[in-house]
Each structure stands twice: as structure tokens, then as C-alpha cells.
Amino acid sequence: MKFDFKRLFSKEILERGRNYYAEDRVSNLLKKGNTITASVQGNHRYKLTINTKNHAYRCNCPYEGQMCKHLAAVFYAINNRKNIPTAENIEKNLAKKSKEELIRIMQEMLAQEPKFNALLLSKEKQILKKIEEIDSNDDEENWAEFYDYIPDRVEDILDEIKCLQNKQELLLALLKKAQELNEQYDHHGSTEDSVFSVLDELNDEKKRLPKKDAQKIEECAKKILGDEYDSFTQEE
Ligand SMILES: [Zn+2]
Image 1 (spheres, helix red, strand yellow):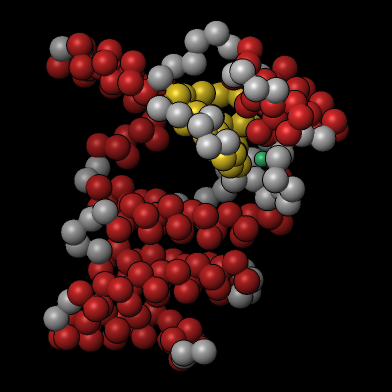
Image 2: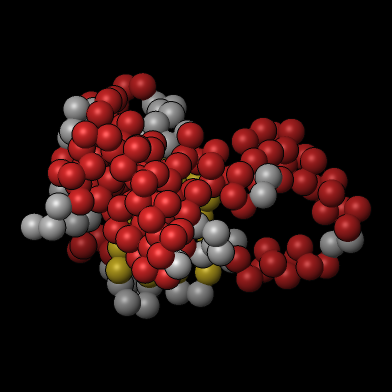
């Protein structure tokens, strides 16, 4: 990268990022067009996106300032690693493989990372599984912050559902889960926001459907939210 990324960070953050990089916490560097994505292992495993063209930098950690140590670590990695794999190259290489070779590669990947088994499920089942696992937390140190991640996860799943034809069932499953979490975390602001996001999407869906189907969705939502249905659906 030509420009001097160091000026984007405070001295302290830069130093911490450099340590993270030195401790080999940056992984999954991948370039696609002008966007570089990466993961950094901090208290959680964070996902980062760096757009080199419009200089937009994103990390999904809860740090309040703009530029966190995870971003600094990724900049160090970009600067120091000679070859960052590109999505275009990976696609090209995959296209050259025979079906047998691809199956062998898949089998090896599945043996190393059993969670990839989920990719063999239908898209709907994959999403249902993600909904089930929204509150699985592989890092137990940080339960206190955990609910702050719920809206992000809900938004990610909503984005996936939006691309599908039949959304209602998944949206209702997500509403149910969001409300369960909302109750479990005692109506924390961010868990409430998640319920609202799903309801917004359901409302859009209702507008697309015949009246009878829209009513059915409404009834299901009522059942899921129970006594709280009114408080969630009252217009401000
Ligand atoms: Zn961060």
C-alpha cells in the first residue's frame, strides 16, 4: 500500500496493532477488487473490511473510536505480506480443477473444519442453523459484551434471507429467536433493536403478499411476541 497508514492511528493503538500482527493474529486475508477482508483474533474473532479505493475501514469490534488496533494489525499484515490471495485467482484455480479433484479438496476441508458441513445443506436449512446458533458463543471470557453482537448477527441473517424467494418462514423463525434473546437478556436495547429490524422486514414482506397470507404472518408474529406484540408494533 502506497500511503502511510500509520498516520491514521494514535501511537498507542498503532503499537498494539503491531503487536497483534507480530503475534500472528491476522488471518484470512483476501483481496477482491478494491476490498481486502481479514479476521483478527482479539477477545473475539473480529471481521474487518478495508476498501483501498475509497478508504473505508470497518471492524466489527465494539471499540468506540474509528480506528482500532485490529485495523492497525491488518494494515501491518497488508504491508508486510508479499502475496495476498485474491478472490479472482482462487476462482480461476478452482475453475481449472476436475470434479474429482474438487471433491477431494472438499473432503479435506470438511475433515479439517467440520462446520463446513453446513454448506452442504440447502440455503434455507443453512439459515435456520445460523438462527439456532445466533447465541452460541465460542469465547466465554466476554459474555458481558456478548449481546452487543446480536444485532450484527441478526442483520447478517436478514441480508441472507432478503435474497431468497420464500422469506416468511425464516423471518418468523428469526423473530422468534430475536424475541427469545430479548427476553433472556432482559430487554437490552440492542436485543430490542433486533426484534424491530425483523419486524420491519416482515412488514415489507406482508405488503408484497395477498391479504390472506399477510394476515397469517401477522397472527404468527402475534403468537411469537405474546403480550409484547402491542409495544413492538405501536406506531410512534
Ligand atoms: Zn476492531
